[in-house]
Length: 321
Image 1 (cartoon, rainbow, N blue to C red):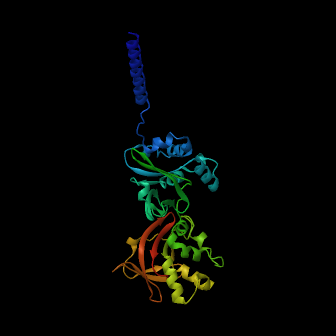
Image 2 (image 1 turned 45 degrees about the horizontal axis):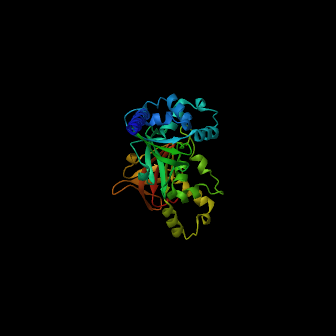
Image 3 (image 1 turned 30 degrees about the vertical axis):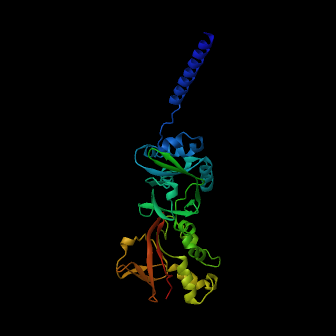
């Protein structure tokens, strides 16, 4: 009798424990969250949460459309505010803050494994055109960098309406110079633009904001291979062998001031007035540029949209007359 009572008691306790365990499981079931809900419920993203609320983008990221969000944490936000001279989020003009945040958003869900090097579009708009800004993504050995400065530190936080990737810095709104720095394929162009002996500060000029002349810009950006081919053509060993007047004049032929000329604006026998002088565009058989020496450059990538202008990538350096 005592043995049966002990057995009954043990069975009763086991059932009671199991019942309590099931109740606990029901109480702590993880509910699916939207992108905004993930951000808003994390202590690491209070600045981002407040910024999204202030710009009314919380509703966008709390909806049903799919997005990819690059999420800067509180430390990244504080660093950004300090760098641009603001004490807190409230000091950032709402219109500017909106574009900064939209520059962290891409339409559709991009998983970390799917990142590849290239230019893509964000949800932000260029001040030059009102059309979507480009973003440069550099993926090297599964290390992903955005616009040359912001790195993804944690990927693939899944939400009901997309995915979040944590970043260590606020993704910069790109100028022409931002892309020259970020794109590893334009390294020689950056070296040329920033050569210390140049009497023109091209980096500062091409960073000019829209609304101040000579912005916006249309820039024809030679690839690294284009510069290598130029050195062979000139019989030079390096860019430093090209004298300053020649290099300065050459660079001016790659820039059109006060114009954001898209690929759709080009036509056959179209004269383009660069800062250095006229060159001719043609589109039949593929978009090309012809300089005053009858050298032809092919346009191999188009419409890389910065905030203060647009870049078209070319395969041959344009030379002055």
